[in-house]
View 1 (cartoon, rainbow, N blue to C red):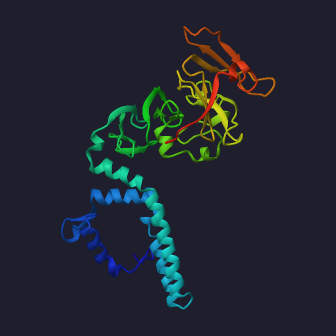
View 2 (spheres, rainbow, N blue to C red):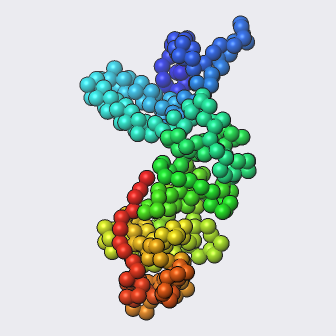
View 3 (cartoon, helix red, strand yellow):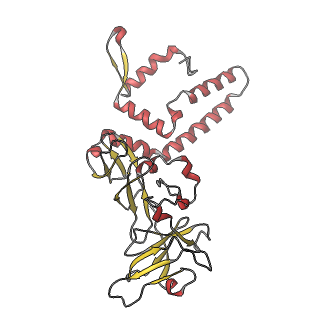
Length: 326
């Protein structure tokens, strides 16, 4: 303890007694062979604190307080200021921990409850290639029993396997999350959703969980490429900062989703059989990508191809709306 500046070695027995009474550790052996061994509760708590705020299990915060106390003793600082600053820091850490408590819940439920044994096998883990289970009770998550690891997922709506396609970054099978027929569908990688690659946080058109570079993606076999086929700028709540993109799994009720706001554009609901974005063409007047629309059998209409903004035949089939979010 003296080595890390968190007190004197004379206080060690008191701390050991405290963590024993709280069932965080247990004593094994006798005499010189005695050891302090962490219990499952202690291990899970430690992992949970470290996942949310590593400083809660490292000696840095306690050491800082000890140094500040010594400054008070030397007359370099007032006790009132140190107490006020320390309480403010602890309150901030408590609020942050409280807002991220779901990460601790995931660990506890996977370790101490039967949820790890329940759920439905849905997709393969990218690490061990065995099936992981979807645990539907809130918070919804994916649990790999072989790796004994839990991955966060979007809350609410439905989740299904996406054609057994895998993320190129980590090999996890992809899941399609949908909030319903009038909502945005999202293709996610469980690993990228739980631990987003840091470089993706500043890229346009990349939603949480996408293992892809967004609108700049030109890979023909990229699983996310259909979501990145921009049609035109959005004229909804985002005032043009977002882009309207065809939701490739929204059929038969085809729609365009905005990448920034909750605007959607419904395309011929009830009468359209197929909608396709012509990615290799641009409108001569406005630069938007044209749409090719085919009607269902029994609908006495010829298919149309044109620009959403400039062609009346296409725009007359479209109706604006608002998406629902998780």
